[in-house]
Amino acid sequence: MLEQVSPALMLRVKRWCYLFFLLPLLFPVASYFAAESWGYADFFAFGTVLFVFVLVPAIDQWLGHDPSNPDETLDVPRLASEQYYRWLTMGSVPAYFLLILWAGSIFTDGTFSLLGQVGWILSIGTVGALAITIAHEMIHKDEKSEQWLGGVLLSMVCYGGFKVEHLRGHHVNVSTPEDASSARFNQSLYEFLPHAYYHNFRNAWLLQKKNLERKNKSLWSYSNELIWWYGLSILQLVLFSVLWGWQGAIFFLGQSFIALTLLEIVNYLEHYGLHRRKLENGRYERVMPEHSWNSNYFLTNLFLFHLQRHSDHHANAKHRYQVLRHYDDAPQLPAGYPAMVLLALVPPLWRRVMNPKVEAYYQGEEFQLTNKQVLS
Image (cartoon, rainbow, N blue to C red):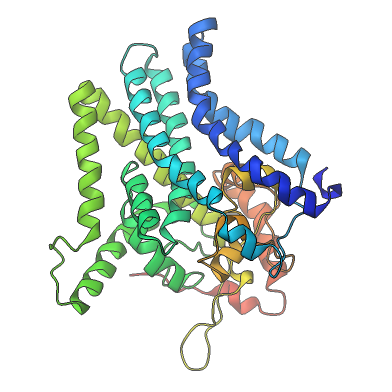
């Protein structure tokens, strides 16, 4: 549908369309008031999940691909200099904290049965995964204020280690056997997730230890930012426990687990089956757009601040979301992330859809598909 729109017009329209990211923040509130007005509280507790994983993929397919690609010379410098885009992401930090505080009070006030409470955690955790996307945008920037706000946002889902491991681990080792966030060919999601949970947490501490040793500092010094981020998570857990007892603690930890799990599922689909070639000197080739799966669907890219233009993100990690470009020659996902997350949950269907795409991409270089190296 949108492919017929002028790219120049679309760039202007998208400036305001990024405000769509507010919808997932507001949808739990709308769901709650719908339950208050019409009943069926347990059904509406799942409202945000249904919105993100049912309604959004349908609209995404209807709207189609984003026709705009900012020109490197004319558009990128102008867009990168506009503070409006920066304030959108920074403003999400207090907004998300207020949301989980309010949602914790609803979780514990008797509105939902046990089934509804499960739905509520899933819904708020889904919003938390979108918040991680925003944190991901900020931790890549040079400004200290954005880096710290990104860390604060990650602390709200108990995943502060992502700030260290993603920058110093994933972006260095992406699409190689050394990266726990890059799924191997034929690896199922349920094989990938436990491996990713453990190795990404562990690797964050190992990377931080190595970084501090270079500065002659202890891992347990105040210079270890992981202590700050996880300490902040503990303080928030204490706050939720003081306010609402054990139910408050369950809510905070539950929404955190759903958010970080959705993040790792997204990691799974972003690099599935793709490999950087090993050079004669033993090093891997530099990261190129072809080492990430790309998705140029308009609506989901707005919700995710162009995370789906993942090929450009890995090729140009410092670029802000509004200037990320689509690469036609990068491997392309058949749908936006919400639909692909659902597909990944069913490994036989995932392999049926994705394996032929990986095999076609490496046609003539099938040895790339037999890379059996794993982390110890």
